[in-house]
Length: 449
Image 1 (tube, rainbow, N blue to C red):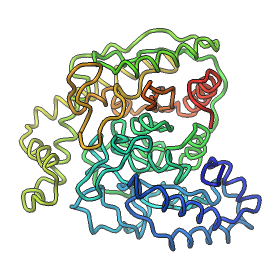
Image 2 (cartoon, rainbow, N blue to C red; image 1 turned 30 degrees about the horizontal axis):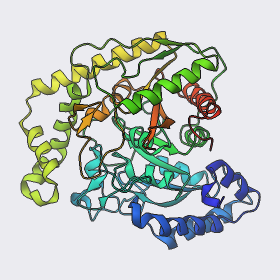
Image 3 (tube, helix red, strand yellow; image 1 turned 120 degrees about the horizontal axis):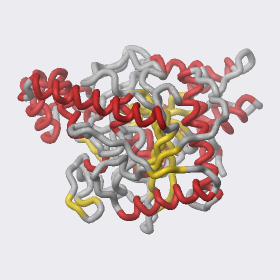
Image 4 (cartoon, rainbow, N blue to C red; image 1 turned 90 degrees about the vertical axis):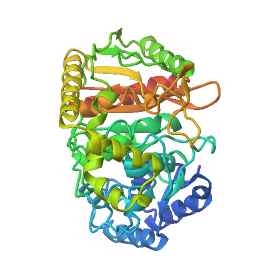
C-alpha cells in the first residue's frame, strides 16, 4: 500500500507525526501523472503550486494541530479556488481565473489540506455525464468506455483512482451522489447551507445546490464535514428506517442495481436493524422533470443572451436547453416552483416519521461516455435523466443524503445505496452510514477500506 492508498485520516495522522507534507504532495503528483492521462479526471494541475502549498503546511505544523495536515484534495471545476482557472466545463468560461477561494476551500486549506488540482465537471455542471467539448470525456476507472456520470465526474474519479483521498463537489440534484455510486466511493450531500457555498458563479436556481464531500469511506466524509461545517456527533438512538428501492416512484431499475440494493438491505436486517418497507406518496408533478423548468429558465437567464450573441461558446445540447429556457412562460416556472414545494413537503413529512430512508442512488449502472444517459434501464427505453430519478428530492427538501457502495453487478460495476434523513440531521445520517458501511463490509458486499 502506497501513501495515496491511505485514507485522509491516516495521511493527516502520519503528517502530524512527522511525515513531510512535501512527500505526500510528490506521491499525489506521481499518481496524477500515472493515471490522469487515461482517465481525464483533472483539468488543471500546477505541480509547483502544489509543492508550495505543501511547504506552507509544513511550516504551520509546529504551531498548529491540523485535522487535514498535508491531505491532497481535488476541487470541482465550478468551485472557486483563488488564482486557478475555473471553467464550469464550458468554453464560455475558458479564460476565467477565480479571484478568491470559496469559503469552503479556505476552510479546507485552513485545516491543512493541499489543493491538488481541479476536477472536471459537465458543461455548466448541469448534465449527468462528464463529457464536454472543452475538456473531453472523463472516463470510468473500471472501464474507460464508460462515464462516471456527472456532474462531479472528475473529482469522483480522482478519488476512486487514488489520486487524492478526498474531493469537494457540488450537488444540485445528485451530482455528488450518483457518480460516487457508479465508481464505488462515498458522496455526501449535506443539509442546505450546512457548508458555506460562495463566493461563486451565479446559480440557475439558488437554494438547492450544496457543496458535497466525496471520499473513499464514510469516516473521511465525516472528517471533511466536521472541517467544513463544524458538525457535532449525534447521540446514539434506535433508528426508524424505511426502505423504498425506487423512492416510491414508477421508475424502472436495472436488475443488477435492484439485486444489489436488496442484498444490502437484507444484510442490514440480518445484522439486527429493523427496516420497514415503506415509501413516500408523491403528488402529481413532484418529480425531477416536474421541477426541471426552474433550472432551464435559470440557465437561460444567465446564458441566454450570450448564447444568442456567440452560439459557438455552447454545445448543441446545451443550446437546446437555453433555447427552451428562453421560451418558458412565467406560469410554467411557477408550476415548477409549486412542484418543488410539494416535493419538499412530501419528503420532509415522510422523514418526520422515519429517521432514515434507504433507496438505490441511481436506477442504472454506468453507461458509455458519449451518451447523455443509458439507452435502456431495466429493459425499458430511457430518457436522458431517468438514471437520476432518485436524488433531486433531497435537494428540493434541503435534506441530507449520502451514497455508499453496496455491492457490484455481475459485470463488476459498483452499485450505490442512498440513505437520506431530515434537514439538519447530518450527524445522525453520517453515524448511521458508517454503521451500514461496516455491516456491508462484514457481509462481504463491499470491501472495507
